[in-house]
Amino acid sequence: MILTKNLTKIYSNGVVALDHISLTIKKGEFAFLVGPSGAGKTTFLNLLIRRELPTSGLLAVNQKNLATLRKSEVPLHRRSIGGVFQDYKLLPQKTVYENISFALEVIETRPKEIKERVFSVLELVCLLNKANVFPSELSGGEQQRVSLARAIVNRPLLLLADEPTGNLDPDTSWGIMDLLKEINKRGTTVVMATHNREIVDQLRKRVIALEHGKLVRDAPKGGYTLET
Image 1 (cartoon, helix red, strand yellow):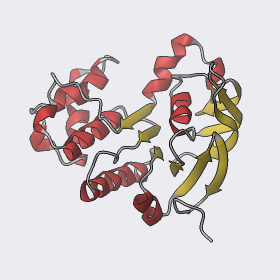
Image 2: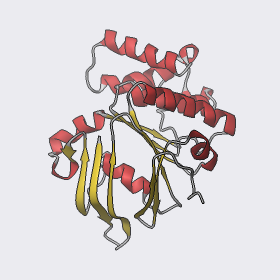
Image 3: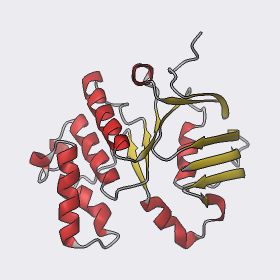
């Protein structure tokens, strides 16, 4: 699913965000991306959705080299990836249903299929009764569930989550993690950047740790910090 070899990203100001990262994330895996602020986590996610290009090295997603992807191929690549963020990124003037359906409308999905898919993901995230309300009428946890529903309505091969529990209380955070685990169980590869030590320690998933742009640890079932 994801393959990197000596992946390096150096910004124009000389900051080395990623320094010769080599790893493989297989289809269907759930991997935590951890490390202090500035470690390179967000840069790695941005490279995966081709918001940025690597300075050197290989980055392939679903057997496609992202550095050589034609500009016309980028939208199709991004459709295969769902994204969930700390700030939800919902459209305030659209209802819950419209926020989710918009992702399908832009790719000209048939209206009947849009309706079926939207209600299917609303059921998954337990928000069927909130379809016609606006984001401002939802709690933070509900907004994040809408964000999750929107991210998976296209049935992506890969889901990238950047601090999805960052603004949520512990109980709500665990609800979001249960949803992410269920999405992963259904076959979607999940890569989640997080500072939440408790979640990482308890779930015992793969942990990829970055520090100053370097890969310092890759544990198949690790905790947030190196165990002694």
